[in-house]
Image: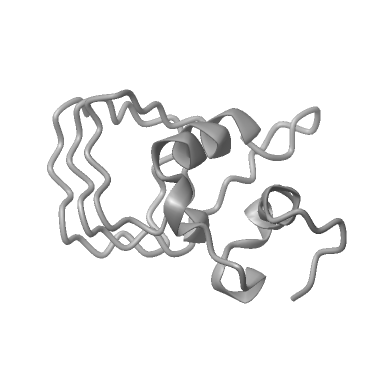
Length: 108
């Protein structure tokens, strides 16, 4: 799926697990509850105005329940927009956001 164009798409509840999103355009896409664990992005993946923290990063792998590597990649791409209110994010990123915000207790 390299070079896919999903800008302004409603990808709510879509299944993008394991999808190659290198060079894809996701600008302004709605990733709310989008299953995205295992997807691959790179520096050429366009993600302007994407609320990546609304996506579902849970995996089917019992040894690694959350795709923390992908969460870190997403965060490294756009650190400035991390929400303070965990209610705006998917449960799979709550612990990560709490850690980044300097809180140890996850509030819903």
